[in-house]
Image (cartoon, rainbow, N blue to C red):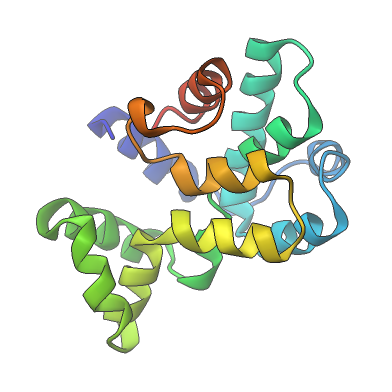
Amino acid sequence: MSAAHLTRRFFGSLIPFGPPAADDTWARDHMLDGEQELWLRMSRQDRRHAIGVARRVEQALDSPDRPVIAAALLHDVGKIDSDLGTLLRVVATLSGAIAGRDTAELWVKSSGVTRRIGLYLKHAEIGADLLQMAGSDSLTITWAREHHLPADRWTIKRSTGEALAAADDD
């Protein structure tokens, strides 16, 4: 992740409101019932960010299938389990960069804030599991799991992955 991306996400997360009602309706129209339940658990800021990602994917791919839009909207859904606010997300991101994401495995086994930081760093795997339990399509589940991996490790169609990754600017 670039410093510019992290800076934009930080300042965007300080805006205390969620997406406009019309955007929220548009997003929910692209989700299965179980996905909508997860969507409502996401923070207002994460939902606002996700709609931006999905709109950029929609423009890049010209009428993508519903699971692709759902993947854009729900790729960060695993963050709900960490229940971290903006400042602790900054701490988690820096901790992951310094200690390495593999350390998250140990942190998840601890308690308190350390556990929550570990959960945040493992949001891709957690999100994929949540989406699987919600009955999501395999593409939506796979993208949640793989969205932080290098492109050569993606198992979804390369052009779809490139559009999703570019739209997320991660």
